[in-house]
Amino acid sequence: MLKRDNLLLGIILGLITPVLAFFLYYLLVYLPKYQKSLAEFIDILGDNRQALPKLISVCLLLNGLVFYFYTRSRKDITAKGIFLVTMLYAITIILLKILHG
Image 1 (cartoon, rainbow, N blue to C red):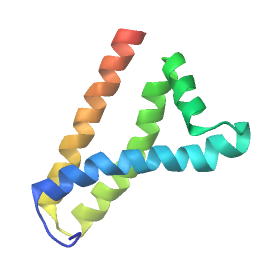
Image 2 (cartoon, helix red, strand yellow):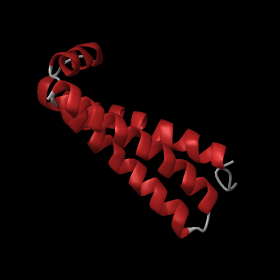
Image 3 (cartoon, rainbow, N blue to C red):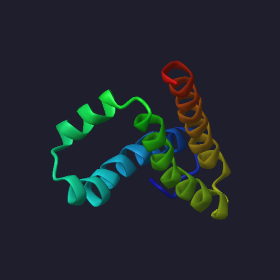
Image 4 (cartoon, rainbow, N blue to C red):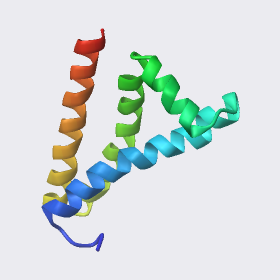
């Protein structure tokens, strides 16, 4: 499925990759340092309005890597889907920064 070149695959990859990066961030960075459960981590993010846009931005880095992989392998339509979702995440980050200061 990952060898196909279509927009839906790019959208799905663009949505799933930051979620995967979120869990990787929790497991590799946050959990060893603070020893808090995932639910507590999500509560902390909900309380700290400045941390959420920053974490989303960090999670989008993995989207950039997947986008790079698909553009290098000439799967341009899939890369467009990844780029589209990345831009939607970026608009969300901007709105969160505007609304929450």
